[in-house]
Image 1: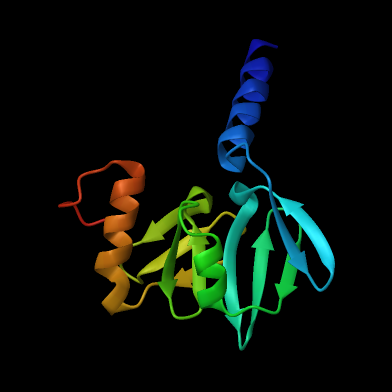
Image 2: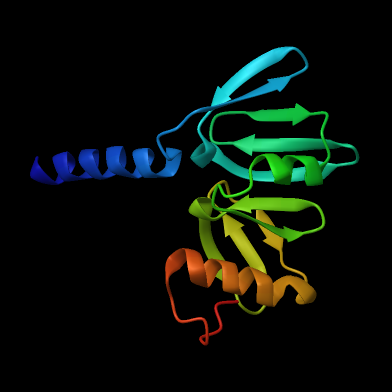
Length: 136
């Protein structure tokens, strides 16, 4: 019984931290959606559109990745390649050999060699780990 109560409060705390408390509004084709920044798992480019993958639902918006990146700057996100932005709170694992980031929804995001250093530094800063130790 006590273990279930601990799990319950841990899940509540995790949800609050992941959601970063503040909600944001985004207008998508005349429809306003309200979401928590922590609910975003990743954002993928699709031509001049972007697919926002969240915990609950996917949204297709008519903005390119650079525009979306400017809108959500500072939300604990990092652009890992030309077509993908990820939320570091949803990283499930890292593969050093294949240079992959495994996300909480099971998606695998490739880190190009030229971005490896930038992504490693960003993750080192976010998780407060020694930057001299290779993470990827």
